[in-house]
Each structure stands twice: as C-alpha cells, then as structure tokens.
Length: 193
Image (tube, rainbow, N blue to C red; front, side):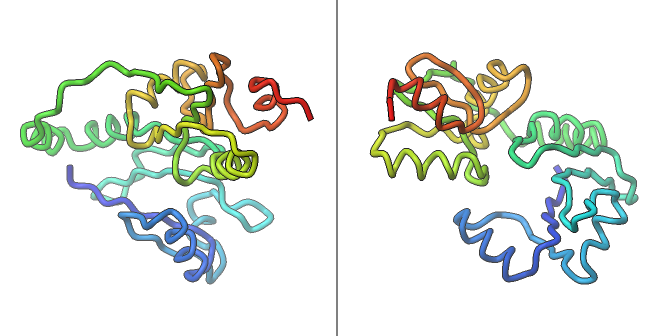
C-alpha cells in the first residue's frame, strides 16, 4: 500500500541514532522533535508536562487528516493487524492492488517452542531487554520468539493477555504471565534466593 512510516521523538538526533543502532537498525526515518522541544508533540496533544511524549500512533491520510490515533503504554506492542485494517479502510483501492500482488503463504499453525523458558518479545521492548540480561547473568537458557515478526505467536500472546500484545510474555514450564517480574520468574523456575 502507499504508506510511509515515520518515527518522531523528543530526543536529540544523536540519541535517536544510538537508539536505532542499538536495535540493529530500523527501516523507517526517525525525526527529532528536540528543538524547540516537543513542539510537534504539543500540536498533536501528546507532550507530558515533564517534557516527555506519550507513545502514540497517528495515521494521517494524503489530505493531512488524522484518521486513527492510538496512545498506549510504552511497554505495549501495537497490533499491526489493526493498523493494516485502518490503512485498508483509508485507501481500499491500494489495498486491493497490494492484495493482488501478494500471494500469502499458507498459514501454518502456531507451534510453541519446546523449552522450559519461552519469552515472547520484541527487539525494542525495555522489559524484554531487562529479561534477556537477567537470564544471561543467571545462565538460564531461554527461547525468544519475536512477536513483531511471528504474527501467529503474536496472536497467541493476545489470547493469553485479554487481547493485548503485551511484551514480554513468558511461558515458563507451563506458567504464562506478562511483564518481567523477577519474583514471578524465580517462582516459576523454582529458584530460591
């Protein structure tokens, strides 16, 4: 479809560059709303009093009209399927053209990895980063499933979390819970400290 993704942050350009590099690079432009600080965020109503912006998604059509707004918690992964539906509704002809060009691969049923610890995550999630570090420091093997790329896994995470694509979500020896909480992880693993 005829779309352009832009990232906008109140952080400075060097900070945005370092963040993108820490993720291994990103595929869309990042814009800095650093000076005058947060003026774009103010115009969109998402600048907090302390100078940070809310995490928000705006879908703007070709005429400059805001067609969709999603303000969400920084640790939540927005549902890409919802965004695709919004884009299709804005430009159904482009969606039809894109659908004709793409022949989707047949969907395979989701198969949970066989491991004591499975972490459903995204590359950008702060809780996921903390969990990776904690598992490494404690020499606990785990399998990581990136829900940003595995949409069947993302659907499973939404089933477990009342429709929310919350990361990290863990399946530790059959116990499923969201958010990185060391006490819950240790309890699920039977670790006593």
